[in-house]
Length: 83
Length: 42
Length: 348
Image: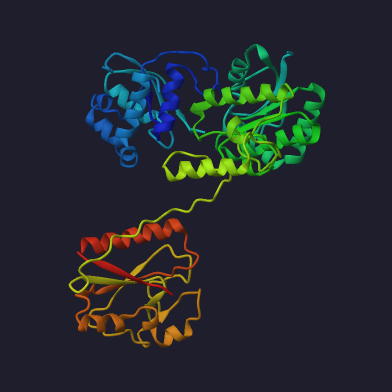
């Protein structure tokens, strides 16, 4: 799963939902641990795999306003520790 | 995580990185995109 | 002990029926627990049962309050639960208000005990004083620990038990005071508290005092005769014509004006816009509020080393504390960068 969430909180929410299950219990993935590998699209190890022209064209705008490091750390944290 | 040859779900957000952008980037890395969505987080 | 039968109120999102696009859903009743209610049921275990869920679209309830409350009443009259749970709404304002309405209808109007949960600053927490509200943060990720607390209170209320004080039971204080006996007389408790306080031990005040922020003063200046000083005013002194449009109060901006080559502020070149005092005398002599004349005298007499060639001005009446803090930090930042030793903020 590649996420494009704008905040660390929402990133964690999506990441938790597809790994351990929907932590808000609002939807169908509540109590269901899918354990899917999930990354933020701006995480360095993912971003560097994109063809540079395409990445520049598609991500330049979002990268101006989003904190890639913070977003990546939030999703990585859920991937590695569950929270 | 090497994206080459992987099947990706692109979960984008209007205020973040939208689905089509994630999908285009993922394809450029050799992944195939099986689902592409753009949500508005509540 | 018999099972506590609970009706759970949820908005469209936490019921799993959709997001904003489903916010116009009118009140509907579903069997059993749905959406986040499933987690409530988990925490209730064998001791409680979510027998029905009332779902309200946030917009619907917000725009049709009376109809929504009527529908809730009809549902409660028919289902006859032992207790009602509303939310958690976190910081969703429309949802929080809806939860308050539901709980109030249940408890105040029908005598059914109820509990809600939301962020303390959710407008719903202020609608009715007597609703029991479990405080939450703003992130729905904490649904699990919050539901545990909500379930505990719901079971307690459903069993007909009285709730203890807010701080021990974990709900927002409602300003309800009950007379009771404490273990020790007041003078003993006071002396114990005093002893703890003077020996630096922790203690718990029985009265909640409003705390004001303690602002530590800057260290004393040692080298006044050799120091450079800047004049700052919150008295709204501006050049004639107020070119920067400084507001008369509630300021969010400050401006700097040059004093280079000036011995005093002349009434022909300067003005005062402050709305908090009688400004006519200041208009005739701006030095009353920005004492450039007195400062130059100190300079000539070598009682201060020198004056920073700019003074800072804003209108400090009804100014928000956060704005004042920010402006102060900005002013200090410039003065520090310019090597100024001290600032003289002249009171009005």
